[in-house]
Length: 77
Image 1 (cartoon, rainbow, N blue to C red):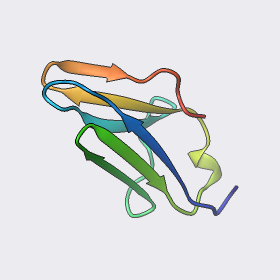
Image 2 (image 1 turned 90 degrees about the vertical axis):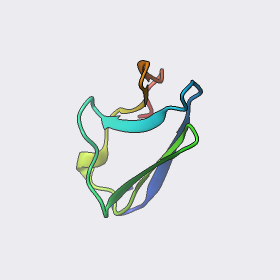
Image 3 (image 1 turned 45 degrees about the vertical axis):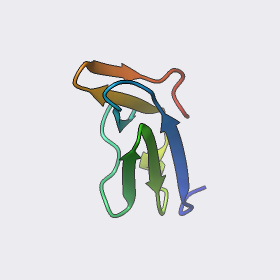
C-alpha cells in the first residue's frame, strides 16, 4: 500500500562471495534514505520506506563478483 514500508531479500552463492545489487524494471531503485540496500555474505536486503506508486514493478536481484554477474529468476513483483 502507498505509504507503507516493505523489504525484499535475496541470497546468492559464489566464490568470491557476490555483492547483491537491486534493479526496478531494469533501472535503478530509489535512493537513500527512503530506499536502503544492504549486502553481506551473499545475502541482500532492499528496504523501501514510505512506498510510492513509482516503487511498483519488477524487482530484480543481481549477484556480482569478479567472475561475472547473474540475475535471480523470477523477479519479485
